[in-house]
Structures are given as C-alpha cells and as structure tokens.
Length: 234
View (cartoon, rainbow, N blue to C red):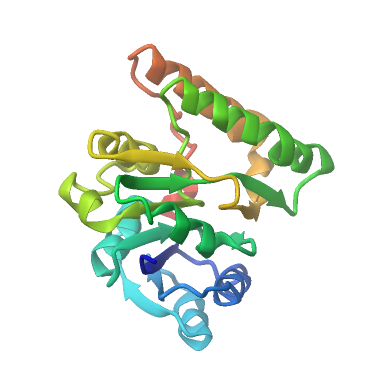
C-alpha cells in the first residue's frame, strides 16, 4: 500500500489541534507521518503538536495556501493528505486513502465532511445533503475538493505548482491535477469539522461556495468577497 503523510496547517489553533491529532494517531492503519505546519502562531499550537508526536514545520508568512504548500514540500511520502486543525478524521480515513491510491492513475481523493459544534439542521445538511451535492458536482466536472479532507499524489502536485492560490487553493490544485490522472470521491474518506464558521451566517458557509461552483461552470471569475478568508490571515 502507498505511504501517507498527513499535513495539518495551523495558525493559533491551541483549542483544536490536540483533538485533531488524537484522531489522526488513532487511525488504523496509522499515518506514516503527521506534519503540523505552524503558520505564525502566537499561542501554544506548535508546543501541543510536538507533545502529541507530530513533526512541526514552520511557515511564518500567514496564508493557508502557503502552509499547505510548505507541508507538501516537507512531506516524506508519496501520498500527502491534508486536513484542518479544527477537523477530526473518522475511523478508516487513512485506510480509505491508501486504498484509493493503490490505483496508479489516482492523483486526488476526497470525501464527505460532517460537522460538530453546529446546530442540528446544519449537522443534518452536512451528513445527508452534502454528499449528494458532492456527487452532483463531480458529475458536472466540478469536484468540490475541500482543504479539510483531500489527498494528492505528491510528485504530481509538485509538478503542477502545488497550492499556488490564496483562495480556493484546494479546488484549483485538483483542477490542475485532473489533467494528469483520476480524481476520486471516496465515501469512506470521512471527517467532521467544526461548525465555528457558521457564526458568519449560512450564506458564508454554503451559498458562497455554490455561487462559485456556478461561476466555474460558466467560465466566470470567482468571487468570495473581501472577508470570506479573513480569518486565515489573523
């Protein structure tokens, strides 16, 4: 089976990084390495990561795309999975990724994302409606690859420039990689992520993404608005 490095970008995530890493290290089989990219944190994120057994790589310039790229470049193994510091991978996550990349044509895998710390309606939407949305988007040629739950073949990702955009870096890398191989949606590659982004309203959580998927389908410029990714720079 292919070996898997897991990259977790983190900036001031001391409240979330511990449970994130606990879930990763409980995987069976375990990841072959876990890298936390400390993206200029001013809190205990890096210390907690080291205490949990992760390898810490430092990228002082804020920007999640920079942190993802630093992790991709630092990874030692052929498949690089990415998740977020406020995300908890579910049992079987690493196993699903390893199975997906047994196919030598696979360059990207991704899966569904549930919510925790969220209202019941949003947990329901994430569990039942979001997987349907992912399948429809894939059929339309717009795989909705999420930074919180995807994996790439390292050499292929580096060959196309990696995470080279500050916004929607995950989707754009997948679109570049589609020219080189197969993108696979894996229902068993499951994670739960924090519902904290809902504090900005459901439009920011759902509508902006739907609007930009439509823009990509129509060949129009994407527009996430001036504040959508503001938390990434803090």
